[in-house]
Every structure is written in structure tokens, then in C-alpha cells.
Length: 296
Length: 284
Image (cartoon, rainbow over the protein chains, first blue to last red):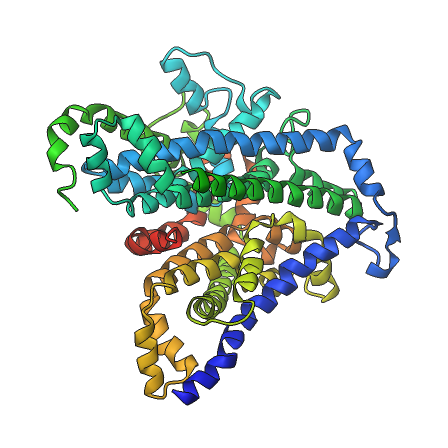
């Protein structure tokens, strides 16, 4: 035992070092650098040493810039909408697939999840055709059931919601899979006991499923928030922020500001604001879920 | 397990119809875009601009694939994507297995704090590190190179988290017995840990490969020359063909080719991840 015990002393550090050092070098250090850059004026083209200190000026500028404020609002609305539509839908799907012993449910789950492995760029291209205002299949289907055709990506009123639609489509199977993995671990006799006590389906969902599913739910919501607040791919492919800034989001704005306008300091400030948004959202989620635990 | 609803099966049977309807609705919602993609790739150009749209291609043809191969650098793009996704996956699996195992098996000072600090990076939006990373890669002379793309893709917080959750279920008696036999900690990890972690490793490998195959923002920033483009960047270039209706089938064909590796991989490890991988990730 002596030899094994001694070597275990440094073994964990040796095992952790590669991952820890890589994450330190490629994520944690860049965040600090990003904050440092956000306090400067810098074009990305000149050497790092040529940066000009401007203090909080970049932050003041972006918070007085209606276009950035629009991007920030759009980002929060987008992430909120994907969350509010996507997660309950996934929860419903998960309960249905888990409880309904139906032939072909594994096919439904596989089909649902398969959308998650498709690159967002491809998802965007496919949906671009589906949502085509003139003769696109979605408008044709609307016509079949007697609803008026929609301009989808072409109008400032509907463009952001079109992006929400294709994002929910892309992630529904992924969230459903996470939630089913959580459902599998709930002991089934709990439901039977509750049914015997006269608890209806809604009551059982609220009193048993949601609390016991908390860990998977929190995980799914966290992933949903991070992906939603960081949205870029579909915007860059389909709308490039338009029409009239209605789909401009923070990541897209920061990319343009850094690489098209050469204002890396201002772009870095935008990314720091986004990082704070994610921290507030995920931190709030974790606090809220802990509260739920205390009162339960 | 299978008899869990037996006492309620009569009631369940009467409530089956709406459930089936909802599942079918969901399958339709998931399936329609995939159907449109696949059939679109086999349509003839005359069928593309028609109003109302053609739902079933009359005479399926492979012409669009040939055209896609003529217009796009498919060979080099596939090679680049496989290289980037493959190397990233191997590196992420290796670094995650070692670190996740250590966090699960050993006790040491500051373990939980270090784990939290690393896993918290899962929540960092990619754009928050992009400007400095771009500058680092540029300064190192690695812009427009696959190595530059690979640099920040060798370790991943989600991987560490997934492996650690799974490894926490490994019984310590097994490891103690191996230590008594004089096995080194490294041998314990390789000979006992890795075989036990196989379902988690398969799940992580699938997620990592898909994630890095699909990545868009970072390669878009780093890679410029056409010979370095990945499949996703090639699909991105297809965008310029979407304005002309007659190229729609080519766009669909190119897109379909870009997602096939992921679909194949997903089907291969589907069982493993559905049974083992995810449930361990959300377990306490």
C-alpha cells in the first residue's frame, strides 16, 4: 500500500495538469485579456503594446449606442424565448416518450435528437428555404390549414421569431434526451402511490416530476441560456442582424465591431457585457434552484 | 420495469390517442426539414422554382451531388474537418478522462474549488475569449492554419464534468485491491478506469466530434484560404448560391454531405449514450 499511497500524492495533479493548464491558457487568461483590452482603444492590427488606455470609455460608448442596446435586448429576448418555448416543450415530450409505451418511440427520439448533430450553419440554410415567403413549404402548409402566409425572415416583426423557431427545432431533441435521462432515475412507485392518493396528472407533474427532475432541468436550462445568449451562427448565415437591426445580437455586433470596424476595445467591452449577462442568468438559475431545494 | 404501468393500463389505453397524436406532431416538426433537405438534394433543377413547391421529386437524380463536387472543394474540406474534429476529439477525451478521473477518485486540498473553477468555463460564451485568442494565434504566426484552429480545442470543461460524474460510481475497493498488488496510479487509470468508463468515453467522443465538426465562429475567424476551409465553412459558402433558385438542389446536396459523418457517428453510439452517458451526467 505504501508505494501506491505515496504516488497518489502527485498523481491527481499530474492527471489534472494538462486539462487545467489548457483551460487556463485558452479560456481563463483570454477572459482577463479581454477585460484588459476592453479598457483600451485598439485596432487588432497594431501590436498589443500600441493599445491606448481609455478606461471605461468603451463601456460608456456602447451603453449610449442604440444599436448595441438593441442587440442586447434582442439577445435577451431570443434566449428567453428559446427557453420559455423550448424547455416546457422538451419536458412535455420527455414525459410523453418516457411514459407512453408506444411502438416507435425510440424512432421519435432518434429523429428528434438527430437535429442536434446538424451544424447550425446547415440548419440555417435548410430553414432559409423552408421559410421562404414565396412558395416555401411552411407557408404552403399554413395555406393548407387556412392561415395567412408570413414574411418570416423578411420582416422586422417576425425575423427574430423565425430564428427562435429554428433554434427550438435544433435543440428540442437534445433537451428531451437530457430530461428523459433524469426521468429514468425517478422511482416509478412514487407515481403509483400518488395516483392511489388521488393525485391527477398535472399534480403528479408538479409535485413529483419537476422537483425530482431538478438536476436535469437545471442542466438543460443552463445549456439553453448559454447557447441562447451566445447566439451567432444562424444570425450570421440568415439575417446578418437585419432587417433593420431586428436580429442584431451581441456576438454578431462584437464580431462586426472587432473585425469589420477594427474597434477591438469596444468589441471586447461588448463581450464582457455578454459574459456578465450569462453569469447573472446562470447564477440566478443556480440560486433559484437552491431556493427550491430549501422550501421543498 | 416493463410492468410499471400495468395497474393503469386500461386507463392508459383510452388516453393513448392524444399521446400518439402529439408524438406524431413532434416527429413531423422534427422530420419536415430533414425530409425537405434529403428530397431537395435529389430534385431536378426544373422542379426547384415551381409554385406550389414539389413535395415528391418525380425522377430522383444525383446530378446535384456531381455539381456540388464540381463547385466546391469537397475533398480538402472533408479532410480538414476530419482532421480538426478528430484531433480535437482525441485530445479532449484524453485530457478529460485523466482530469475527470482524478477529480472523482482522489481527495486533495482545493479539489472542489479547482473543479468548480474549471467547470465554470463551460458557461463562458465563445465570443468572450475570441479577440485575445485571435491575437494570440496571429502573434504565434498560426493564422489561416489548422493548428491555429486546434489550439483552443484540446481540453473541454464539459468533458471533465461528464467523466467525473461517471467515475464517481466506480467502487474504491477495486482500486485499493489493485494498489495492494503494486499497480501504479497510472496503470489503475488505464487498466481499470478506462474500461469502466467506456460508455462515458463513447458519449463524450460523440459529443466532442459533433461539436468540433460543427464549429463555425472560430474557424471562420482563423481560416481564410479556400484550401483550409472546413465542411461547415464550405456550407457557409453555399449561401451565395441560395439567391439563385436553380442551385437549391446543389445547396441541399452539399449540406447533406456535410452532416452525414455526424449522423453516422450518432447512430453508432446512440444506444450507449441513451442508456449510460446522459443519465450519469445528470446524476448527483
